[in-house]
Image (cartoon, rainbow, N blue to C red; front, top):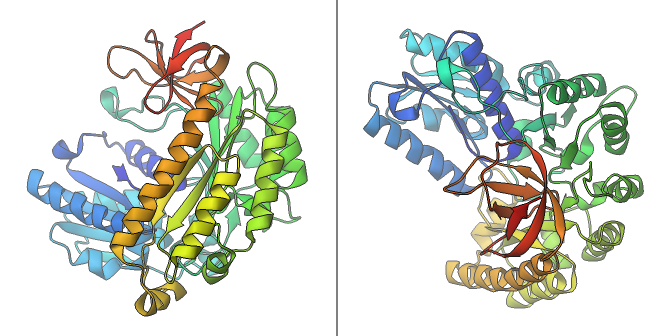
Length: 449
């Protein structure tokens, strides 16, 4: 079982793996597997190339394995995947709920070349992507194969509470591969969070394709800030982390929660906000069909910084959107330089067939050399900001969650998203306090208190 792409897709992959184990399968390393299930991503051309490379490598290293492909790439181009040597079956997101059975059918030699696909915008298919299977599958026990095919505990698992997106950004294929926004009910989410706590979980990450839209489709409509309040007030969850959230979805109430629940030596709401930007140029944002302007974005980030002075605040930035001029890129650089951002996820623009930006790319592509130079400039800019952010914590105490041992020492992640190399190995999934003693290449060195 291998999943590519976002946290929501990783959660789907864990659910698929749990479904296979529940049907009597044992998880194996891909080289020894009888059936390989590949849960794909389609957000960039590179993610699709990676999926094809995995398929080719599987055929080379494990030629007898049956390969079943699902996910966003399978929804976007099922016939393309079905034509690849070694692929036994393809099921798009619209039929993800059937993947476990399809994998077993493939193992028995049935339905080779089967392609399952429907328009996921159809109301009758909406439950398939936010359901008992794909909202969460034993989140206290997901992830890697352990003895007898059981799951080892994953540190910091995702609870997928929302799927789909209706924003229609000009560069994005996700509305076509995931459908409209759908939400898991608050009762189910609270039950899952409580189950996670009972299982000994320390940190849970709320995830979704467009997380800030959670609850808008429920009857009556609900708000993400009300859900977060319920989780923290009605369960004993040690720590909740919010994954990527669009700038317009950081409401005043949610920012107030960020300040209140993110206080103290062991904050229960992680001091970490990921706020997608994409560009600091108003003209580029308009061509992207983004639903905010630079000044709106800046106001939200400044409000987050005021609410939580030590929070990590990160952003996605897309480089080389069609028609992006040198002057527009400088606007982005200047904008980022002024903001209290602490890290960036940088992406070169990737033209997706079927999106408005595909045509823009045909008319005004940005040369690859310029894209690489701009990526390098932004990396240099954010490296300085990230180092300055980390430097202020040297000599202080930080709350962290231990991760799996890496090498001779342990590792952890602080609530404000700083990786820490520990002075000793500790079991994964423990809340600890760390005395930060210095900087590493991209994080901190620390002593467990």
